[in-house]
Amino acid sequence: MPTNKDRSQVRFPVTVRSPWWELSRRLVLAIAILVGTVLLVYLDRGGYRDNTDPPGFRVGFIDSIYYTTVTLSTTGYGDIAPFTPGARLVNAFVITPLRIAFLVLLIGTTLEVLASQGREQFRVARWRKKMDNHVVVIGYGTKGRSAVELLLSNGVDKEKVVVVDPGSTALEDADADGLPVVAGDATRREVLRRAGVDRASQVIITTGRDDSTVLSTLTVRQLNPDAYIVAAVRESDNVQLVKQSGADSVVTSSDAVESALSASAESCLLGTVVLPPPLTSCAPAGAAS
Image (tube, rainbow, N blue to C red; front, side, top):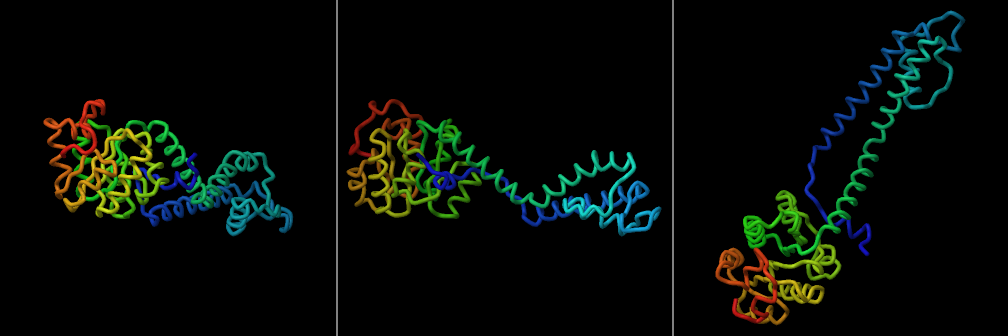
């Protein structure tokens, strides 16, 4: 069963705001609450009594600032207190909500992080339940992006495509394209399991190195004997090796994935990558690509 650590490595597109914008917004709101409460207390200063002052002495502006700060921070020394019914009602129904809002602002960053983590875990859990018969694209370089573009143009839902890549640039590109991303090395079983390879119908492997392609193909085939695997290699000498590792089709040129997928109308073998018919209707592994 996936752990929380595993889930944290599945990324979804998010809206990123400048931290300075967030800080400024919180600071302005906090100052507004402070100033508003000070003015509220000062305007109703006749309803407050300072126990340290002589009888009949009214609280001043500085007393209002002092009372506001100790009240909003819940310190509450008790030396200044409302004593008229009106002042007490204002405290109950106005200043108390302002105190709560002020405290939320003070700990807002922590609350936001916790809420964000909770939402992210919920999203990942819901995504895992829905993810079945999807397409896993290993490597999001030029060939990986071309494959995804062709899949989407042929009607594959974006939510049914999962990208696996260890590179930060590729992850940012996939994130910007609105694709779920699993960060990690696709030669590792746990990384592929996070991408749901065992439940995928198709896997497209476009790593930058042929040795990584071979290892990824072997691992994918071990986890999912039925997935249709298309792999891209740099050297034509490695085509047969990748096929023996479990790939159903192997392509070699820099635009091979695009060309191969575009040929789907004439080739059942590669047509399964775009619109998958039953796998039993296609040629077995080792057929000419």
